[in-house]
Length: 117
View 1: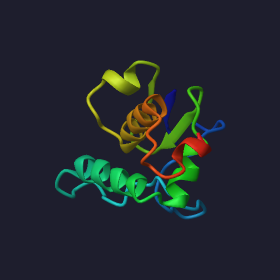
View 2: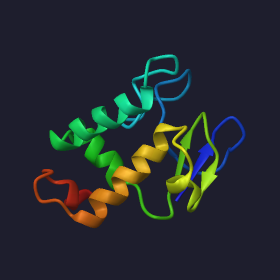
View 3: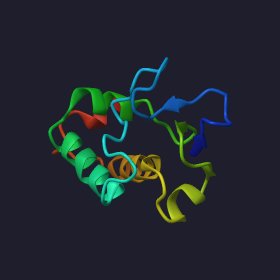
View 4: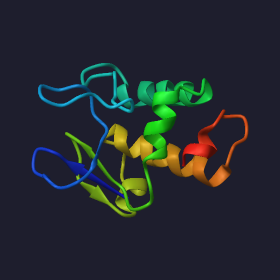
């Protein structure tokens, strides 16, 4: 899995950011902007709640991710192990970690998540 900074990367990717001019927002976009106290902690709780409530847009977006996915955002450029072991600087790292956890655990109580991954 790879996370790319879209300021420089122009190749194929799964966009995981907020709505921007000329770009629709992703259901996985971080609603907590930089400058918000603990935006990544709040994002993790928000994404967990979306998964637990079986939000169809979030589950579908997570279902598009594979181990070979390139997740696109505006704040980080990480690949392979770096995604998981580097200090969290981007909500895409949280997406990758939560995706990997739920993919491995195959939780039955998360609605239809297993059917979309």
